[in-house]
Image 1 (tube, chains in turn red, cyan):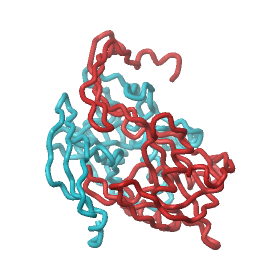
Image 2 (cartoon, rainbow over the protein chains, first blue to last red; image 1 turned 90 degrees about the vertical axis):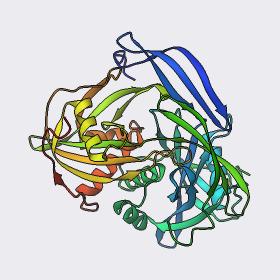
Image 3 (cartoon, one colour; image 1 turned 45 degrees about the vertical axis):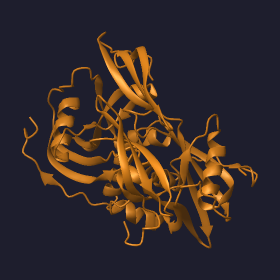
Length: 201
Length: 201
């Protein structure tokens, strides 16, 4: 934030927990607005999530590894980059390695951090940290109990076609594709680092 | 969904309301998983939102109209395309016109629907419908009581620079920029329609 953003910022003056059920913690804070008046802000506390954009070199062409998963709140099977919630205190890279392995069976030799996004900043503390992975080695998926996911691979052009046809509604997948295009065009840099295979086991 | 997605789909067998406070309605459903076992799904019911990508022809160059707004849950001032929640039964185009006018003072002669995204499909029913607007006429912003927003304009190149530097974390803004690039490259079509000025008043 800029130093002169005080005319926009809200300050907490009190808070209460409305509900804590399962992984969901709902909070209500009393805040002082920039004009000195008070308002309440209700929001979810979320541990954050990691999404992985897995680049699969398949002969001469680049393919992407994605999963198809039923998302109950929106009642749709969505096509998504592999992702999952951070466990308490977990490093975002280790979380990415774990989720990629669990959902698709792949492990990666190289990883690069793409960036952090806020997907519901109006009512959730959630950040999604997006990692890129390459040098993929196939293996056996180990989904969590009660998790049904299907791995699919497709070319960048195929995913772009879905995007252009309005058939890629998942935000982290849209943004992963966008950043991949920016990187391929030499506009965005990805600081690749080598990871020992098996780190996430 | 494909007809053969039954191995992924979860069916509700019971539901309950956990909490209804302010605009937040938190629900917990019991679902039957594809393997016949039961699980619970906790999620927010959200009325949906509309975001607007406003294209401002400023002499020879194209500029974009954005807002800077403090987002309490993430404790940051975010740069975003104008957006807001749908009111009950509201048409997404009328909502886009209303939010653009309230937050920035602009009205637009032409509108085109870009698409629908799901920003938190794991725990919220929210859709964000993204509209594009052009033929902008300036006016006076009319923010809601307790809403502090600051209008800024920038070129597409300036917004791309922020994206490439990791300084554009808001998902609807990332995706609006992505779709604008796809449209400018002739990859995505935008079905422009004329709107009478003053429709949203």
